[in-house]
Length: 153
Image 1 (tube, rainbow, N blue to C red):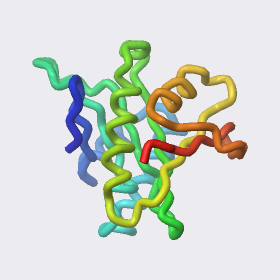
Image 2: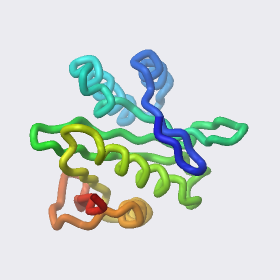
Image 3: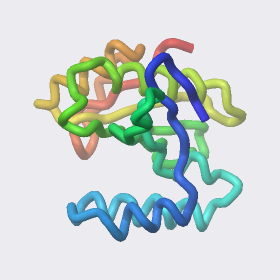
């Protein structure tokens, strides 16, 4: 588990991920979560790089307010972080706090040589999260939009 001032960030078990998939109404998210679970099952020794991690408030509510994932560790030592926040909790700095802590933790793990992210061109909030967390534009445009690379290492 990764702890920050306001959050507990931890990976879900395979069973918990199955529950999330079962209860997800958004088909795109359901497919993404299913792909993540398949990655966990196929690569148990690298499970943390495929799992869905949740962002839980570390207050009395214990509410889950968002999630993140690392999208696998590739052969070049690169992981890609992805994330999402419940709209009710956007604009409070929680995602910046989570992404910053997650990339600091990930950068210290064996085999991780670089951390990247990709965001839609018009998602200014996500771009600000990445910039505040120490990412800079890489100059590459990916499938979703501009790619960023973490430089705080």
